Image (cartoon, rainbow, N blue to C red; front, side, top):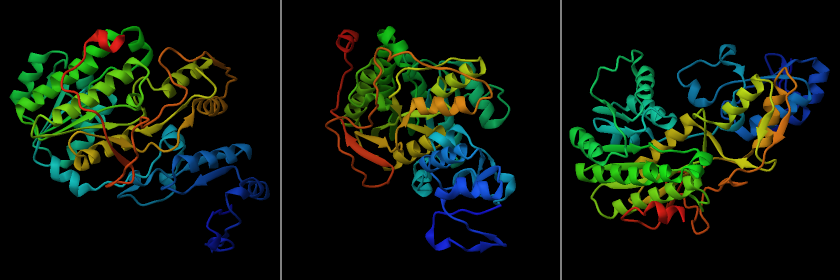
Length: 408
């Protein structure tokens, strides 16, 4: 057994008789000296880059790896052997230190009627889970998928009886229905997470992208304005920065429509933009894991493709924080850390599999970029309030364009 620490002040110190024998660069040598079989990463504040570096060194030394979970998961717990666990995808790809101003969040959610569109989706359901502890007067779940609403309610109350009026089956494409829902509940705060999001499918069916992401968003914006909503947060994507595909173009328009409504109504209307979310439905990691379980091959579009990753919990925590500090008409961009090469992700997952699995490259699909960006060419990274949230402005748009205008 040995202790390693990168802090030069701790070298040669002893903890209960166990000596600090070096830094991370000494992992291989110390493992050989001691015959160690496991590397324990006892750094709950470590980001994904540090975890990946330690994981790769450990793999070269033939060490299994276990880690303490992030700080947020340890709050209220004692730290001991019971908290050590195998590394997760979130540890390797999406671990960020998120500093949340709980008082400001509580100020705009507690005692308010909060409505979430797309409440059954990955982002929407996590929004509901994180909003509930702030004790809103009512939390209204809106989704066109009744099974998704059921699954969300089950995680919220453990019963899933579908017997409360705050569960609303409705499509954002239905303008009259949206107006009726907003008039019934008169929400103070809205998180608009409903959207179509799969790039290849939306390239094949661009009309559907426009109907949901543009016209549906306009329906929700108009209903919110009519109902006197105090704060409206539109969930966007990094694809909206210098967009080249239908998802990006439609979500960029949604940002502009939200900014346009900000200029027309007394409420505060803003958007939040971020990249890939770990644990979301359709995630590349889910696809890789399924391919590995089936014996492969694992399909990667291009060896140089990179993407930003963040856990759904961290992304939503920052979305809720953004709702507290965002100004009218802004797009708030979440800091996603460093982009990750998808080929490296595939290689790590294959290396940890007991089977020999081939990785093949299939080529970029229509509308896909090699590298995503979080900011457009004309946008500046300005962080006046929170170190992980940038504020940018987008040109406002007051009326949605036609399908022909977006697809031409």
